[in-house]
Length: 288
Image 1 (cartoon, rainbow, N blue to C red):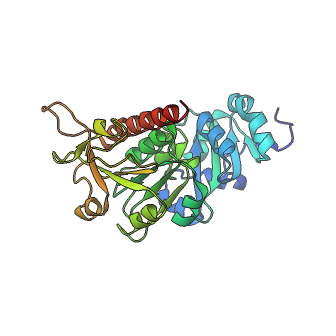
Image 2 (spheres, rainbow, N blue to C red):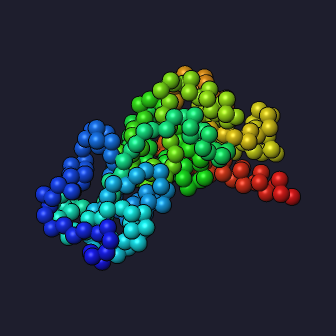
Image 3 (cartoon, rainbow, N blue to C red):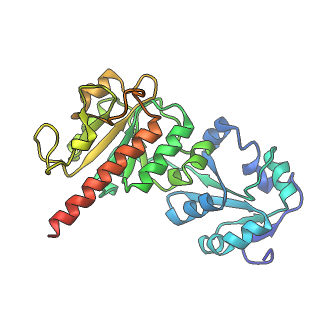
């Protein structure tokens, strides 16, 4: 397989063609170079299939080439075949995935461009989530429950940081996302596009999320909006007062009195699952 078109065997860890894979833990270097690193077969496969980013090259061991060779070849990705010890010498740490790909960030799309692209009735908005693991997990949840795009307020961790990509199982390289520079006024753009903003908060006065869609109405008697944007904040501080004030409705997840909150990724999964059930029920109802 090493003789196949686009596959080059490299035996020198100092080969300059492997420069993209050095210091993979250096996030600042990645941002400066306009690149990101995808790790593992499933993540690289998702990067290739989504087609949202140009892939500069792939660094693979023989078993990974066997698994991904056809996909890499079909995408025309320059592929460097190396031994396992060469991988670890290049990246500078123990590495067992046997597969890396270097992607180019390119110009980030605007919120308007993402809104024009998505036809999905569900969006997610993240405010101030500085933990890349939580950001990655929420992107994974969003992809799992049919969300069309994710919007980021200032202070939210980079979805293309390697840990976020890894935790998301590649969802961050497949899911469209855009940043709001003007916050929370950016929520007005969602509202102008026809979305109702639901702020998830543990506050007692918030509407029980289980009431949404009950009888085809929201808890306050309004018809359930066709388009919803779920707004999530940090675990400690929660959503800012400004974001809460800009939302159309506050919703909460009911739970036992021994615990008043959930990890933000877990809370997002619960809320998105419920909202996806409502959407499914509406579609079934419309088909009767």
